[in-house]
Amino acid sequence: MMDAQNLQERIAQVEAKRGMLLKYQIDPSLSTLALDIDQALVEMDDLMTEFRQTFPTGIVEPPVS
Image (cartoon, rainbow, N blue to C red):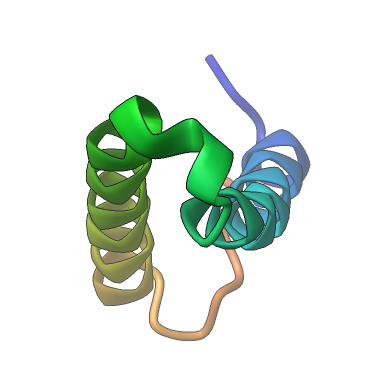
């Protein structure tokens, strides 16, 4: 099971890597990978949208025991 802090760190990593994909997206030397990069961006955006809907404040509260 993942704790709240770990989940928030992983979400931050995903957001940071999105910027890297945006840089690759405009690189003409990666022509055949462009579709994969576009798909990865779509999936990352979907993941972040789902996270924001689940945790609107961005804060993950630990479960109450």
